[in-house]
Image 1: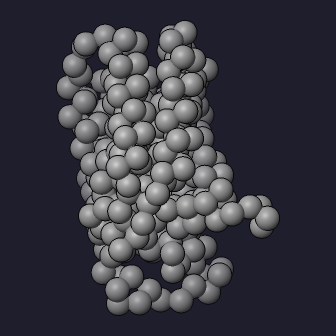
Image 2: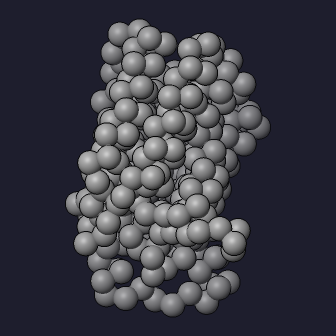
Length: 293
């Protein structure tokens, strides 16, 4: 990809990450069917922290600077504790397909977080096309899922807010650190607290759960919580947090397709129509100017 512009490379890395993240909700729903939600949500971060430690030792990573360390300390709140825990709790009662449409507001939330924490300044055209994509996702949610309000929506909204926070700061840090370094340090900084919380629920774990449940747990630990961020952070660093964050609009459709294949949830034919609208909105948003203060 060396012949491509940094912005184009950023979109490609972002899309790879979105495919990885797009499987998270349906795979999580498989895991929490047999394992405690807190164990799945935070235990996955413990496993990922071990991978992170091995990675940092293998590459002989430098210690973060004082500024990097202070910002790394915020990252776990969003993508080590917040999103994994609340999304796992939500999947105990809501279908993965429903969770997918609620998470459709994540790109806008990420753009707002980029303004606050990474000093990006999207143009009005960017906000316009971002709003078009978000509105399309909302209409799709209402048409496909009806007007039922799940108690899990509170967890999902919290996961959106916290994920946006983590994404924005991680993307900003990835300008001076490797993508895997960012998530690895964040995981290690959170490990002591993670071990305490997971320790409280470890006795509730069904160690005789099916291979399917443990495979699902392994996926969210290795891919959703670790390797996916190698592509996501690098993509945001190259293409900009606001721009690359718009690729998350595709995530709803990846999640819906995965929900149908992995857990047998139905796919609406309207998905194709709204997918085209989202693709168009992202393509136009990509052309809009985003500056960095």
